[in-house]
Picture 1 (cartoon, rainbow, N blue to C red):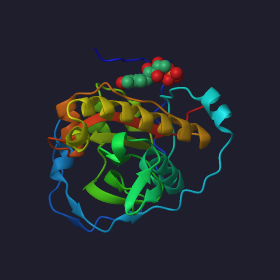
Picture 2 (spheres, helix red, strand yellow):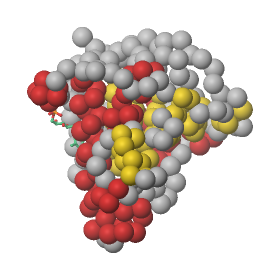
Picture 3 (tube, helix red, strand yellow):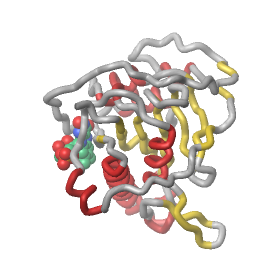
Picture 4 (spheres, helix red, strand yellow):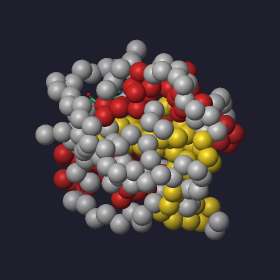
Amino acid sequence: MHERLVPSKVLRRSARGPRVGLWVVIVAVCLGAATSACAETERAVTEPVRLPAPEHEGPPLETVIRQRRSVRSFEGALTLGEVSQLLFAAQGVTDSIGRRSLHAAPSAGATYPFTVYAVANHVEGLDAGVYRYRPNAHALEPVHAGSVGSALRAAALGQQWVETAGLVVALVADYARTTGRYGERGRRYVHMEAGHISQNLYLQAVALGLGSVAVGAFDDDRAARVLGIESPRVLLYLHPVGRPAP
Ligand SMILES: Cc1cc2nc3c(=O)[nH]c(=O)nc-3n(C[C@H](O)[C@H](O)[C@H](O)COP(=O)(O)O)c2cc1C
């Protein structure tokens, strides 16, 4: 059922940039191995991480569309500016109607069923961990401290690009937001919207000189435990983004 491609070449190098300590309170220590709900045992309380303004001006859209390919070999770290631009492309606020925000990707009835999670594997100036993107503040809300790359890779059936990518964007759906307005048909709309966000991420990655791959093959329960996602929210997509290895 799952699509799974084997890469011709995957480089795994550790080139993490410097970390600025952001975690203030660690309530519990992670004791788990890759198969455990490691992230659930690490809870941090700290300030949101404000992201730099997304001001990148890339190549023409037509060039970006032509260049887009799924990339699975990564090396090095991303910058916070790149993370900012990627999250803005996924779900950033681009306009408003009255007090309602409108986001970068279209959404049925502007119901916006997705919460975008950012898994920082290797990002300069950002501690490894799990964050929630807050579109209105264009900020990251820390969720779990510490690297979950290895556990997430295991949950994603061993796909190593989930661990080697600097950032993994996780799309987490709350179906009720859309089915509340459209009934069962709303589920279909949520899936369509995941595609819109995914394509924005793919294209934004290219425009930044980065690479990305949509990952739909993972163990639902295991991946949700790693990210600390609880029912009724559902993880639909993982999107590793990284600096392509030569
Ligand atoms: C819904 C969906 C799920 C996918 N899941 C995976 C995945 O789990 N692992 C992976 O390596 N690629 C995955 N892909 C990427 C496809 O393999 C890739 O898009 C396809 O081979 C075409 O290559 P291209 O993206 O370079 O055009 C997925 C793509 C889609 C649309």
